[in-house]
Length: 333
Image (cartoon, rainbow, N blue to C red; front, side, top):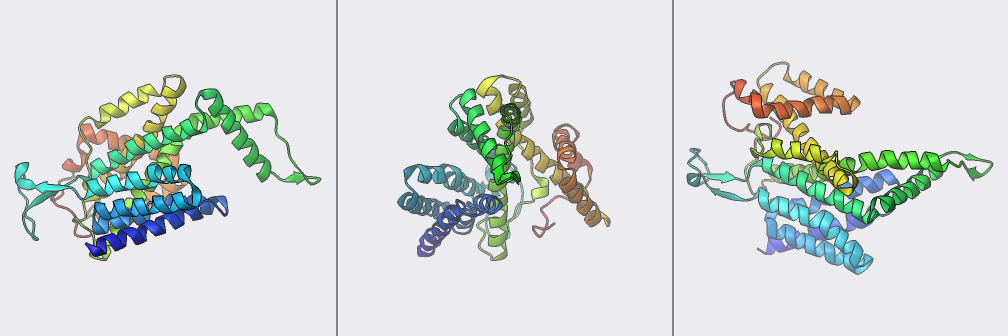
């Protein structure tokens, strides 16, 4: 128990320091530091339990509160601590397999069923959508305020980045600012949700890999290539997509959640490709080619892979691959 508290307090201090460091320096470095801020909390949760993650979040909030004030501490709590504490709590949930009627042996004791990894992905998509909507509300209480805030941000960013003429920054017209603001409003909700979700899942996965390698992970490593989503997920995604056609904040909110669920189905499509290529001699070359293509033409190939994930609901591609059941022996499989 003492180790749990020490790990939580120490990792909470690390999270606060990383969060504070994300407020200074070049833009890319700030984004990178902000992206990995939840990692210490995830390490505490997966390695020493959700109470350690909760303590890490509280310590981090307290330090940020002391040095940056209540608003910043609240932002840290809502965007970094609370989501990761919830995810690590769910990741370590388990119940006896006898309650579900499943038959599976556990070498280390009574057979248990762990919280499905696929549901963690869906929870991440929901939380990412909520955080994206909250970010939009902070930027502007209504569409006009949001449009004005985006215009001012774009103007300041472009003016500082454009080359100067005779020592003066190059000016851009108000019409160009307005046009860019409209484009930003159309892509910002989904892009923001995708960024939030990427941060949550990447840090949860990386913390899992670190704690698994050290023998500290509080649960068996899940078979990520075999993840499934709740049955109503495709219907929910369809309703969200219909909601994107609404006007005003409702449409922006739907676009935010659509971005999160798009990432979820992109991950499901990648899981299908990993699963169905197991045991094939050409698998490494195919996967390298896939991720290389995804990196270069990420938008179009991403849509195709997400459609593959949606098709799994009807086609059951992994079941048709006739692979033997059971998780792989190692996270890399």
